[in-house]
Image 1 (cartoon, rainbow, N blue to C red):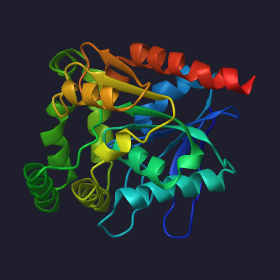
Image 2 (image 1 turned 60 degrees about the vertical axis):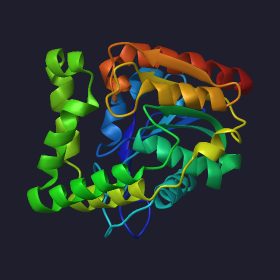
Image 3 (image 1 turned 120 degrees about the vertical axis):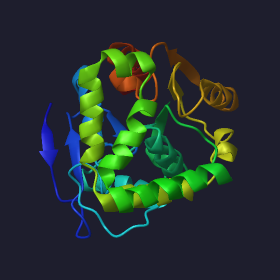
Image 4 (image 1 turned 90 degrees about the horizontal axis):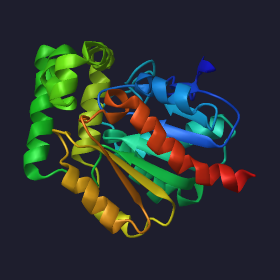
Length: 272
């Protein structure tokens, strides 16, 4: 894996992981995480595709700007990074949770740059009034008690109970990622998720190959929502991983990599 950290623009320094010179897979992390969550996938898939995994502003090693942020801002940042790397597209765009919200927005704004979609542990719908109130409550916690308090509150919900109990290395890794997120990043991302548009109407418009991956034990987004996306996106594939929660790529990395590798085969055939 060729790991690089580069300046993306003058506003903030956008860090990213970049693997190789092959068809490109853009992987967008969830909240409040970083590109580090994709390291196993870069290792497993790096022989097939070029994997670019950015740290969204305020997350990981990227700089931050004053909140609020928006999914449009995140999508434009990703497009700017692809421009910086001289990758005009189309690319396969994958996102987990919040990264899926960004992937939807990227598809709406740059459809010509999307060859395929991977939607992991995410949903199409916008926040409900109760969901928005929860974002506000978490933002208040972050301001008053710090990012560590947010991480502590979220951690048990991000993972399947069996993962939380038995995979202490995964628990510690996820906790470290969350605690490394800046306060501006947490507040900005919460605002972005709270105000994101409803992507349900977008589902019927998606005309590129799409893979939906979901953990059977996801405590944040019920698997029924993944099934609904699968039904609404023509020709999509759905893979539900047992014993995985909201972080299926870390909880069941081999199974996750197998599902993605099988999906990517069609793009490699097109390159031949």
